[in-house]
Length: 476
Image (cartoon, rainbow, N blue to C red; front, top):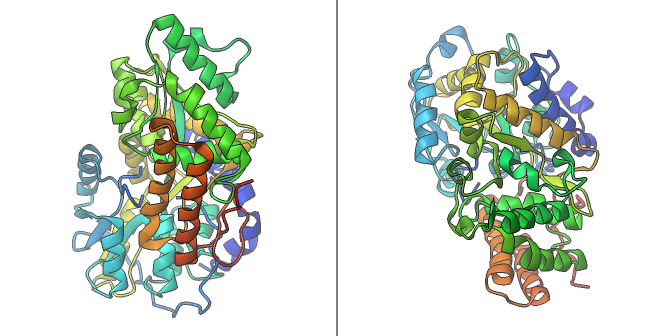
């Protein structure tokens, strides 16, 4: 298949505009049976969005992709498969059970050491499953196979979402660094008992951050205990990076220490956080406190809420994340599958990719792990009802008139965990420790700038995209 036609139709300059639409389209297609297409610090991130990553100065050498012949497709049991996803024990067990259906074994790896292994030319990995953001540093060193031929063979009997194929091109015209594997995002969940406390006139599917705080306050007053919760011990950095900062400032990093950010953190410290269940500091997966009744309203990754919707679908609702003055910030996420250039058995790697992109396998991953398909033809007729609940919320979030997609960090390589820690440090120093807001944002903003200067990483959406290190605007 000539991937040029994807590039011509979905150029990088238009990608931000269509990410939300295509993400929603895939979910609606999956839930309705339509024919329409659709972390690094915690490798269990349960995935990365299409990005307008610039191509390397020198185009990668053409490493010939394995021919996905019928014989190769038949057996991935010999593949050395490393996945940077599904690290939590329960997720890993479910994933291995799915792979056993294809007699495939997997090693759950950590991003830094795994990327170092590939960049060092160890020749020890046949196929890598990772977030989109893991691939640009590999591409810049010509460390991945061009997957165009694999895509062409797969396309004979399945349709993979073009926007996600575009993401795997990493800004090039015809060098496909990975095959899209799965997609997900983060949403809100609520126990129906909480709905009586919803502020008058508020629409749960178009709620604002201010209304959420009032809702949480109403429950605190009415129930005598904090009924809202956040996964402070889990993927909380994504809550800050993809939801709060974009919603209030319009960007993730460039406006990190802006006047809007100061107002946001004042609100978070004085209004929002006091309504959060004190155990939020220990929550990793919000489905557990939802099911126990300790929390009635929560934010988390779709894969970390799915058990609540599946176990008691009549008791829980899903809805989009709140909107702020700058829009409804949200973080679309995509995972890809790539074959290192020095893979010892690339045919076996191609067989793993073939198995994982089959519609029935994609359906299993959706049902068991809460990751949504990137291929058409997934049969949802026998899937848990919780999947439909999440799909509706994800589609509503992506299709919101004020939707503001915020992509996962890109171009930081094995230092991706540092940006997560900077956001966490800012929140902890201000909200937990009570330090001066402007001082903290200025200091942590300097740390952000140093990270970008040292890595050379440019900004990504929703921040202004350009050449050279991303610039953090000075404090007002």
